[in-house]
Amino acid sequence: MKYVFKNAMVLSMNNTEKLESCDVLVENDVISAIGSLNNEQINNARIIDASGKLLMPGLINAHCHVPMTLLRNYADDMNLQTWLFDHIFPVEARLQGDDIYYGSLLGIMEMISSGTTCFIDMYDHMNDMARAVEESGIRAQLSRGMMNTGNGPDFSDDVRLNEGIDFYKRWNGAANGRITGAFAPHAIYTCSPEYIRAIVETAQKYDAPIHVHLDETLVEHEDCLKKYGKTPTKHLFDLGVFEQKTVAAHCVWVTEDDISILADKKVTITHNPTSNLKLASGIAPVPKALSRGVNVALGTDGASSNNNLNMFEEIHLAALIHKGVNRDPLLINAMESLKMATVNGAKALGMDNLGVIKEGAKADIILIDIDKPHLMPVHNIVSALAYSVQASDVCLTMVDGAILYENGEFKTIDKEKVSHGIKKCYERIFNI
Image: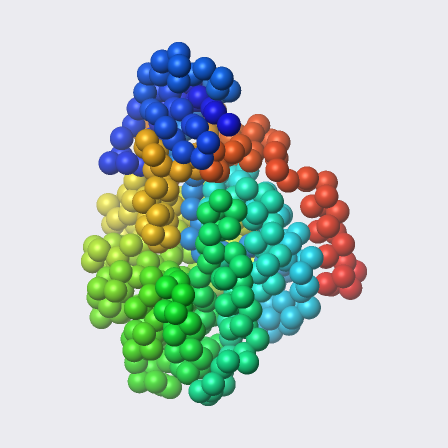
């Protein structure tokens, strides 16, 4: 399919370039031309009038658990350990494949209608999540979350590890490359050192990336010091985790020395401001990490600890909380926050053809209606995106050159079918 976006304001996120009244040509799954187009380029294309709209790269949610939409508003106002072990894990043990499928579709609907075109996820029943990703058209890096506190050393019969291997072999590179795989040791408090080593060895065998929760709470940090005599970051470093390309979610309690390790090993920190605030886990030292050259991406975490998948809220918060807590209005400016949600997320995935609007890049694009009272006048579009834009301002979402959402209509997902499926899952899980 061929599309021409006419007369758009374009924020490329490529050297912060902004273009006025620009045309963008999409052919198949890539952006093939930007600027004034000739008749031959326009021929046989669907013309989309983008006057009064901003065209920019789709947002990348670099850490979430999409099926947890099923647990939205279920367990709130408690610390992470109580929330996770007493409430979330018991319910998750009852989840089945259909729950993951419909919960994933529900989360994907929320994401594509609010400008997210790609997400990084770890969870269970991953074949069902991948099926939802494949059908919906969104892009994702997916991994089977793994937990085992046993000493091993032989984990060849471990169910989760074997499911992770099977999933990676089946889905990595699927759906025209929209789905990629990873391996995911859940966290140091749910995985023994021996189990983490086994996962690392497996990831090395397949040359696969790793997705892990790291240093999310003070309890995790202090328990690790007591048990292993080192920080969680140093613990994972010593286990060889960072020899693979790694996305480390949260990193709230990392030290100066930890930041040096993460910078040296080119580990991506995923900043999850809403979830960390809601669970009172703390605030990650993002300004320090950025100053040391660490790649920092942005994520929502799951809809049970957020309680939504709205990346514009994360952009907004990331641009505010570090100013407030450090009493420095110069920290994390609007552009830095936007980069976390676009180009930095692409870097976390190792994909330089995502997160930007440039010729040859993947056509993962969103249109935002800037002809709204709460955005007028647009003195500075970057500031508007960080401080004023709402998720509901997104009017079109395209992934891989295909329109998934336009003017309130989902093009690839049957909304009524999902609503019916979610109701049935909800009633069974909670015995309603």
